[in-house]
Length: 329
Image (tube, rainbow, N blue to C red):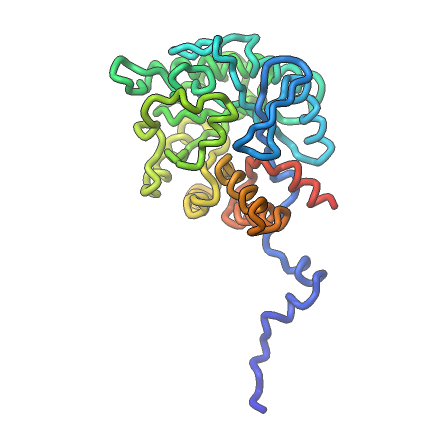
């Protein structure tokens, strides 16, 4: 018998305890942010057909989810409102209402579960009749500077209500610097900015638009402001600009189709990078489970581990509560 090489890489994989000991990447509930959709009313739960297992909740239900997140060890929830259609307008002015759905949910969460972080979406698409993230001109083009001014006021509105992290998801040029300056000017020095710095014009957002009630409203597409899926170097330029303007953390969106972007951002900038495992990614996992093509728990945990392995500090995922339960089991 010929001599076998001294090193057998299977040796450390032979037992469960050893696999745990040699794991290079660790995933915990503290790595998760749980996106939640807000609905009008009291005692309301509205299941979202395009997102099996996900619902819109009235503010009291959002508070209950906040308590659930706390008990599961999830440190932060992200809020997205389904604004009633009669409150939507071309200029999205409901975003600036201090008593809108978002602000009421922020205050309720901070009153009832102050130890939970609250991340709030800064963009106009849940408030506009045309479904765009900003203001449009007569030709239907989303204008940058007037939109950025509106986003500043939206971010201040959320900060005044108690938001811990404002997260501009609009992709307008220059808005991070303007928001940071405005927050500092009003004394909100500890309100973080998590910039959607590399947000792609993706086909994976459809179920989210159902969840916030904007599907069918969108006129045209978002390719003039969200990124082209062919571009990677451009993502690094976007991240560099947002960090220079005062972003505390940056996000890549969507998630799994853009793991290469996550890794390049982490390697280049060495800053906290987050990913959003978006609605289409969630729906694909659930469709695979429904078709008998995979087992939910294994698919969820493997996909989340991929984000951490690529360099993410954390992940926004609709599977957050389920994943946290699995990790606590």
